[in-house]
Image 1 (spheres, rainbow, N blue to C red):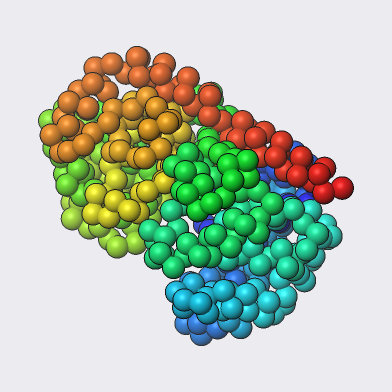
Image 2: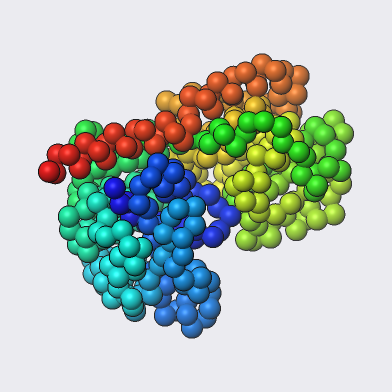
Length: 383
């Protein structure tokens, strides 16, 4: 079948989001896959910022996936109250070339399935009316965009043939909006275990970093800086180090540039990450507590990547843990970090067994299987 995926994350970025992962997995199985990135608008072109670079890349094929985007005369605007739906509709319909033309340029014909993640983007169903429409809820959108986004979400969930979520907490949220449970499937999150098998050489920029190593992989601005300071002290007392991998948009790591045991190594591609994890000793998920709403419904991929690498995991609380019950060392405050580090380093074999079992039970292939079953049944029922 032909599947159209839609998400803002640029295909060429080092962020390997779940939608990009599903795109590649469906392509591996022989399906025709199109990845539609966010529309570029006049502001991007004039300032040469935002999605301008994505637009300049043009359309191309990568990993068996047709990657494209369109230029819109109207920007995506979701904070204009009752006019938001109109602005968003126009942003999808007033594109040059049209979204339809950009998608059909792949040579696969009309998509049988639309899989989208952006509030308001189910308007794609009006462009391809015969497609099966899947909305994949990947975040607590109102925490980022404001409560007005819930109206758009509700429209999407009602319009969709089915709703996928990344975790139980988001499923509970969608059910609270009046969407029936039989219309929602929790795909969960996963990891490509294949990337963590076999011997992996130590990356050159990690060779001289003193062990034991506690590592963070992800957006740097999400780190709780007080927790990080405590972790730095704890690892320093053991002659070890803290390694930070990920984009640092706000230059939060500037104070650590001259640190003797905190190393900011910048962003790495998803294929490089396993090398760093398998040459570390602890995986850390020390999320900032400054805005807890941001993490409502969050289900971080790093949990599974750390587990696949066999690392003990030190983490702050996520709502998803209520039902997921992951094998982690949970911390609530700065004082908890010292004991958690002790536990991780004293019992590495015990934690390795626990996390590897957890990772094997939560592979991307299992998530893919859940999605395929739903999509296949939806297509059959339409015939």
